[in-house]
Image 1: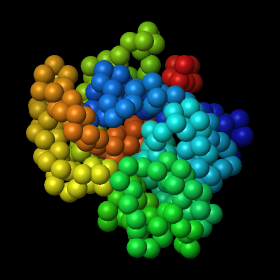
Image 2: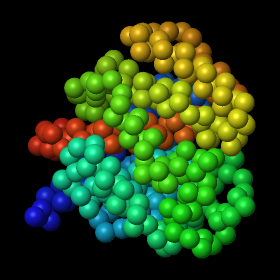
Image 3: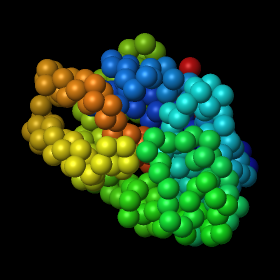
Amino acid sequence: MMTTNARQAAIERARACFLRACWLDVAVRKPGNVSQASPGHGMQASMFIASAEAAAGALFEPGLRVGARIEAAVAATWAVAGCNTNLGILLLCAPIALAVEQHPQAATPAALRAAVASVLAALDIDDARAAYRAIAQAHPGGLGTAPAEDVRDAPSVDLRAAMALAADRDLIARQYRDGFADLFALAFQQPVQPAGWGEAPADAGAPPDTATVAFVQRLYLACLSAFPDSHIVRKHGERVAQTVMTAAQAWQERAGAGVALDAEPGFAAWDLSLKAAGVNPGTSADFTVAALLLSGWIRSCAAPAREAANGWHGS
């Protein structure tokens, strides 16, 4: 039986994995998203780092239910950023955080997915109420209205059932309905991870190495190539989302052929053109962070002592 100290150590490892994932989210250029090399949409990379550090406490607070984690993390984010920088990330990562707490020995993708499934199966109406309040506070772009269980109304069903009603129009909601199937496929069906992808560089101000950059970009492009980005669809419509998806497929092919995308002028130009048009593939970025959390957790299970010594803790 796992001791309290061992369980807390597992939670801290998962928290470190989350913070590394959020760091990589802005350390690597992902066209249309904010990065250290390319601000956009009225936001800077520093806002996302501050948001991650603020949200991590609530997200990994022992004993909190999924809805409470989401609500508290959104409130913490707004206290430091004053805008929505991470709602999708929190919706995806909160069930993972509780799954790791409840099943800290889930050291394989199959075991971790089973742990997440058990969390989703236990969601109740209190989780829905808390998540609804969080979504209303975050007020994501293009939210619109829903014919049933709209987030502006009090929910009458549990959080998983509420998400299922939106699953056909929102990729994050679909994960709740489908047991995070798409997210696990993204996290664990990609090319082999570089050995040190999640480690902070020796110089805290240095960018990640080229293998890590390529890995993160492949994750992002794999998601953007496979699904019309929900955030783009809400704000700009299906046609724009399909256009971005087609462009992502071309860049994914180049990445798969071993091309260093950051060395391609057209990659940065695509990034800037998306931002100039106000097009932000935010759902694909959220998926990238959550996929990095999943793969980072599995990797940390194989070397917990090394992670504890060298993990990035947001400083």
